[in-house]
Length: 158
Length: 242
Length: 51
Image (spheres, each protein chain N blue to C red):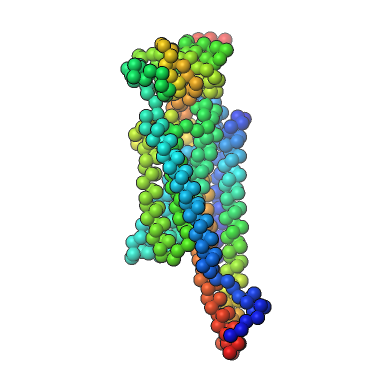
């Protein structure tokens, strides 16, 4: 049987072994990249998220053991304790009656304010927790803001 | 236009209108919230994305089970599982993206390795892997069975993602709607807008899966036809040369 | 409006729109190709019967 070039050009090519091998390699490379990414994410998760933070209480109890290692600590910003500094902000953090003084180096996030729960990242230096990152831990409750209520609370309606 | 096509177009248009309405309510009508201020507007887009990702993976799992069970094994289940997983990956990606955009101003960070965020990243990669596995050349049944098993394995991560905020200490707050007591912690017009967002994006999901499923079904048919055509052409050429 | 909120809504609109267009275009391409192939298959059947 002989075929002219014209005839074979009209033939519909059904996926041959060559094309399917290229497809196989592409798919395996994609799978490999995804598996590597999965490994990285699981590693980061295992080293960070299983014990994402200690509460102020837990941190104070484990103070000697913690030394100057870096960790995350959760608590609420004590109202009236916030002092802006040239480097960032100083404040007191509280959790169930346990308190620590914090020196934050860097800009606090937009929602940082008194009475808000925060997770801070840093280490103890003497009696002060030196923080390099404040994360605001907001609640899952959403209520419309009432400008008048805030004014009334301070008793300064004019 | 067939009845199916008309119905699908209807779903698409409804989704579009409802999304536009959600955006309008979310951006202009609902009030700013206490503490969050205007950032609360992210609430109307971020949780719906996560909900649809769960829904999509649920459908993928159900369709995969139906495919694995020999009595209900049909090509259609495999294609629905794939179409829904693709939408799931799309919405998981959007969950991470909108979460990140919300996290930067609200928490102060784009990303953090807490249990919820980490398990969501794992979820994204698992289903991306599922889609990559489907690209590996193999026979249709083999692919169907293998990817169905992969889908079942990947689904284990869905409850982990949802429960992570209770099982571990996380930066992310607990769910405002899908919490154990189903106590909606969103108030007034904000709650209605969020609800509308859930429905609107679910409609968009339905349209996506429907379109994707139809296309892959046609592609499968196309592949069958092309083989037939190649055989026919081959035969006719041989006839001529004889 | 807050720039992050704007960015979030823009990201969602563009992604949804982009994916929908991609799905629509591919659906159309496959539909047309299938119609073409079916027609040629019918023609081939017809010519075989004629012969």
